Length: 222
View 1 (tube, rainbow, N blue to C red):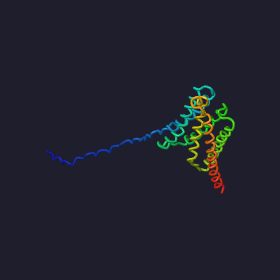
View 2 (cartoon, helix red, strand yellow; view 1 turned 180 degrees about the vertical axis):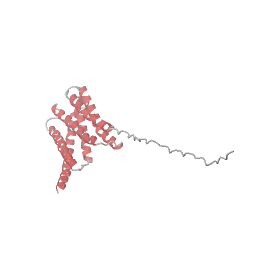
View 3 (cartoon, rainbow, N blue to C red; view 1 turned 135 degrees about the horizontal axis):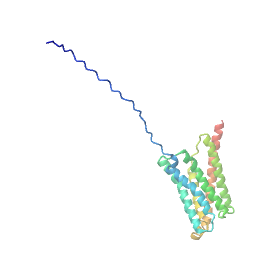
View 4 (cartoon, one colour; view 1 turned 90 degrees about the vertical axis):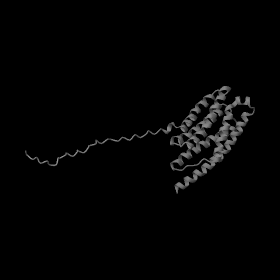
């Protein structure tokens, strides 16, 4: 019987496991467009209100149209405060909103003033109050656009906020027109007094803005 020498058994080493590379795909959540945030929607609503108020004022002797115009104007005026509040509180400020907000404000005021002048609600010497307000809005808009190119912002003063409030109240009272007179005699006179007060505040704030703007222009040229 042959002796069989038993050598150490050779065991094949396991081959390394090859892991196929996996392509990792990172899913980036889509950023919601700021164009449709609540603050901007309120501004859009104010823009839409402008042609509605103008259309309703084409019927100056229709009480129903007048009261609807007042309601639409008041709602639009409220959004002037709300859109800024929402933008600040919920961090919804955007370049689009900053551009459209003053445009909506000026369109609402200018369109209402022009229609009230056209239908005779604002007449006589009170036309000068309307002219002062319109000219100031144009001058300040041009100044702001120029200063924006210089990366200079002109903060809104407290007096300017009061001017805006008085101006909107005056226009709301005047838009009621003959319908308002039948409910509150002297309504038209009250509206014109408030309009003159708004014009006085407009002159003051306009001068303040122009002085500040001219100072920045002079400093930029040095």
